[in-house]
Amino acid sequence: MSMVRRSNVFDPFADLWADPFDTFRSIVPAMISGNNSNNETAAFANARVDWKETPEAHVLKADLPGVKKEEVKVEVEDGNVLVVSGERTKEKEDKNDKWHRVERSSGKFVRRFRLPEDAKVEEVKAGLENGVLTVTVPKAEVKKPEVKAIEITG
Image 1: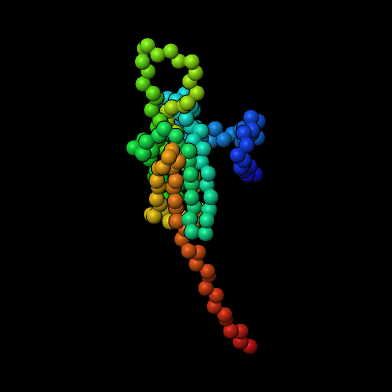
Image 2 (image 1 turned 30 degrees about the vertical axis):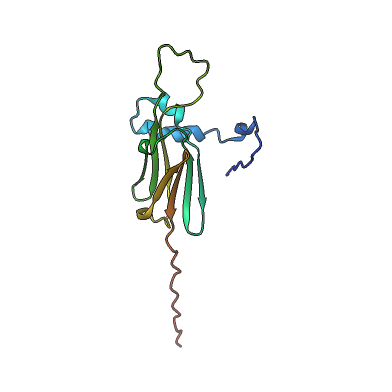
């Protein structure tokens, strides 16, 4: 079941309807890869991604505010698994600073997406603009099966 939230109105209860396993799915790949800083990974593992399909391509958009292009990797593994990973570095702390609140997360993140058969993985493009990573995966033309009529004798 897919739950899609689209609203410009602030809803303090919106996250109550979110998938309770969403964060877990994001953290598991990083834990499996041997990442020992699970607390850091958990803090930023929730990189939210939208995936839409157009007639020409699959387009994925991830909100990565404060992350530089050099801190993000986009790769294709095993032929059809798109991997978006990176790290948001922690802000340098000064001993004289007095923090009142720390809500922005930092640390490593990894998201994996199994691409469909029609994905042209050799033509994937990615761009980062205004804190939004856009990954475009063109689609191959679906070939219609050739039908050959067979003459019936008799």
